[in-house]
Image (cartoon, rainbow, N blue to C red; front, side, top):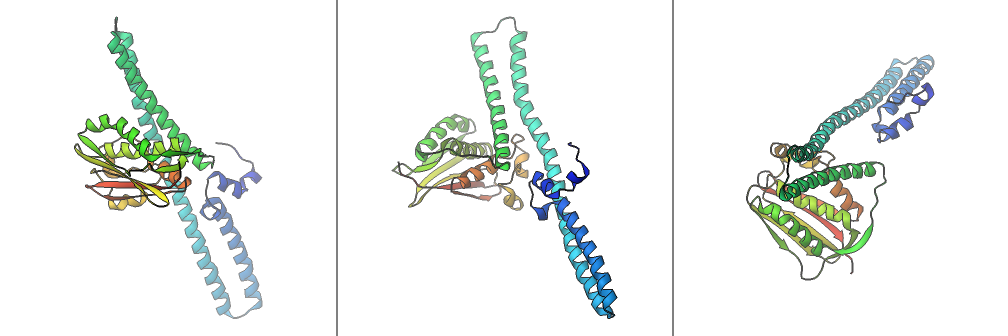
Length: 315
């Protein structure tokens, strides 16, 4: 931790900026504010008591100041609660990222050990090991890219590269890629698209990652068999993309947190231990930064529907 000089430590505005919180959510600022209020209250009470003999006036002023101090004190407590929550979230995040990075690293190590320990390795064995190593490597790259994107968002350096493309074509390509993965869990895709191409102007790479996350989640959190329905609707001014699964759904009490950073539903953690909990957070940011909207409907034990809309464009 960086050591600070006395006067540097008193610069509460910079300290609050470092914490990425507003002044009235920053413990440092609230402590200073409380100190100023207490000092003013003491001086004011002394002056009033000196010039006015009426006890009622003095008591009224003390009461008003006390109420104000209670309000500020409550704000300080809430600010520290948020700091404590952030600290807990950081600890949980470190545990999650350690787990999720250790798994692909272990896969790479096991495959390399198997190759080195064998006197002779057939071409098929070698090729299969390379596939596993490549998959583990791509998984780590994806995790790191997500973390970098979260950091760019917090630092307000996240940028989009806009271009015109068809959601029909993109969805078809991704569905074709995910079909074998879905088939392994006895899941089938149903894709409903308009007759004409649904053109949008957005960051093609980012939107592709959003759709990939939605499809991947639908597969991972679905039951062992069922159907995943993807619908594209072409309206007058926007294009709406929807995916519906028959999976675990989300508990009612946790619905409000679904797009929060590092959040994962409690019922999912019992079955799926992997994942940082930033996919939906990033997806929401990307869609809204592209001028669109995103939302969902869910019922625990009966599946979920996620959807987003983007402004319509011309080819």
